[in-house]
Length: 288
Image: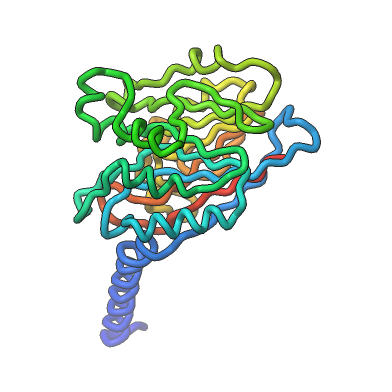
């Protein structure tokens, strides 16, 4: 039988564990950790003998103290050290948390990310916050965003429902499907696909993974972010995912009907400054 002293010790131990867990989730994982999450994928119809290393960065949400200039520089250096063939920047670059003490201007974020190096190029798409933080673009209901113009000025193509050649493959960028709210976007998949010619594999950036059920098999791999892996993830499950599909597209490599999707857990935070079980990640996808 457990005595009063045992109960008190047990309760104290649970309380201490809770404090330690909270301290880790709020103070260690989001601020200090940087994980390289690796996936190896062999898409259906991928050309024999072609191998490609794709580094995926998403959901930076730049702003001090969590994502200041030094943190971004560290992410860029760590990504370059992986020697990727292509770097994909999959949206949400500006600060989106009430806990940010200092915002970084879009031009500064673009300048820092322009130091990324990949032999077949660096490419970007808008995320929903890149629209939501641009009142003029929202008022227009379309056109370019401040973030998009900053990337273009820094030499990084911002793909808005468009396609570019990247060495042996094509890279397509779908604009945000949440640009004007969760059910009204700036995305246009048919327009993007009309620009695809020849038989080179097509890599698709789509910030929100909810478009994946409509992506055809012509797309070799779809790269998404947006979910942050839920920011809190326990035993492969997250309590809250900004997706109509819940945990189906929360994080990681998903294969459905012979099609491949990679959802990165991202790098920054929104709302509460917490991460637990899904540390900030550089996603490295080896295709072949």
